[in-house]
Length: 247
Image: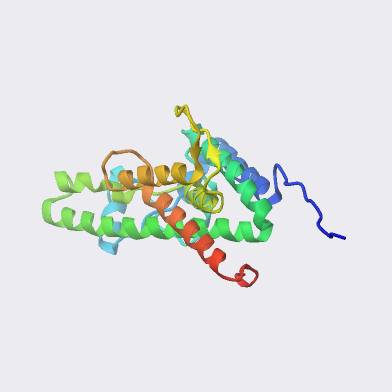
């Protein structure tokens, strides 16, 4: 007699549900208390930079307030979103639910939570590394040409902080595309279904072009790429090793 027991997948498994609740509560706090306590500025992930540049930035009236990098921001920036862009949190939470609930049902809560935070840390590390390199270029431009030069102005994006769950969510999307590559997705403005592997690869390509400056926006593209790369590496390792011993 077979001992097989069917378990119905949860539409809202516990980790995904609680992550969405936490993000929503933080967003409400940002909207209601953000201006009074500069909440968003304390939660976002500021770039690492040379001490000389940090002093220049802090002494510049146009850059106040500037809080600078703190280790806790690696975690807190994952739960804060832009208060002026409702679409930011809506897209992230929808993608977390859409892809994350399937992975959590397959992996279980403990593995999924570990995966989520590892992707968030990977996204933060990639963003910090790229921004530090850009900050070094900015410092050189300021010291060589002056702070108002075209060279320095073009590099001011190096000072941009990051916030949002996008990096961790990109890791989830990469893991989903690896695990279920031929699942067909319907994407807005595309009239035909697209397989998950091609859809996620398309998002990665868009982020790569944005990160390289092919087009300009206010998005931390290398955080997205870092999260996606981290997620891909983790599921690649899990697929080739004994998953029970990973944590």
